[in-house]
Length: 395
Image (tube, rainbow, N blue to C red; front, side, top):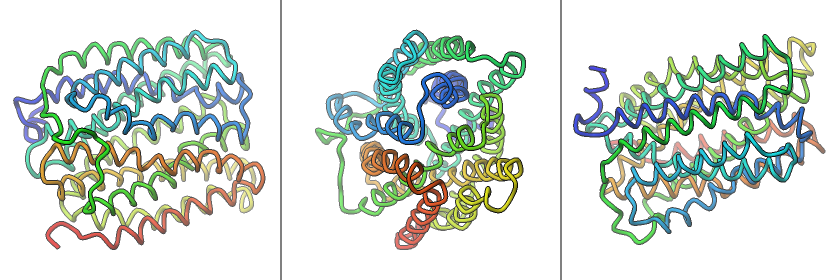
């Protein structure tokens, strides 16, 4: 706690923010640990349908600008609370609806709407609550807190499915996740601070100086989408992984991210955001190659292990995405502009990710997973090349 007091302003509400994030992360860990297997085993969603499902999960990110424009007078704290309420509703729907494609997609869409509202606000609040020069560390610790919660949720799923191999566990898991989301929402009510409203009438904030940030979000969103959507599903449909195995993989990723997130944050503050943006791609190319071609190089059991290792590596290098938020903080005139830009960046990110979701499902079904992850590697290289054109701090 003493360490956190050196990073965050004492009069801020970072404690309530972190506790709320912890509860919501536990709920998400429970949800994420089973949702892919639930869709594959119960709802019978296959390759292309998985892309279609992801299209609707990502659609709220594209609509985020319009949602925030409606609430442009609201503080970041209030928007965070609104996001939490919608997440509670969406998770509750998932727990009680019948397992049909249409209803499941509707529940995913609802939950995702709240999640995307919260996504921009939690980064914004962490930066606003941090002391000068501590933005990278603040985001790093926020990431670590979230990973702790995810880890707890994944751990519960690992134990549950080790004891009972049954699809009957899916519904109670969604109910438990809804309860933790409700706790997170209630804790967020303690965030009574009122950050200044934007001077602009909309959070749809485009300025020429942020054009490179927006483009970086497009590249990052595209390559991230491939792993986030199809990484676990490849293991389930192609290699036959069950919910316990998937949750164990997520747990290992959470542990790695928990341990390394503060280090990545410090690295961003120490060497600057530009080298971090560029450097992560070298690992990404290797990760994508083995994820797409492992089954050609090894037997299926070994190939699955190789893919799991590379999934963890992708989770680790994804931490470097914090660098873009620090980049925005560095070039923004004030915190209102920073908040508006980050929120808009999320929507810009989704302009391409919703199409990657649809296209990715089709590519996997028609051209195979090799082509899918080859494209991801190429997008990563484009991201790195473009990041090399931005000016680092002090340049």
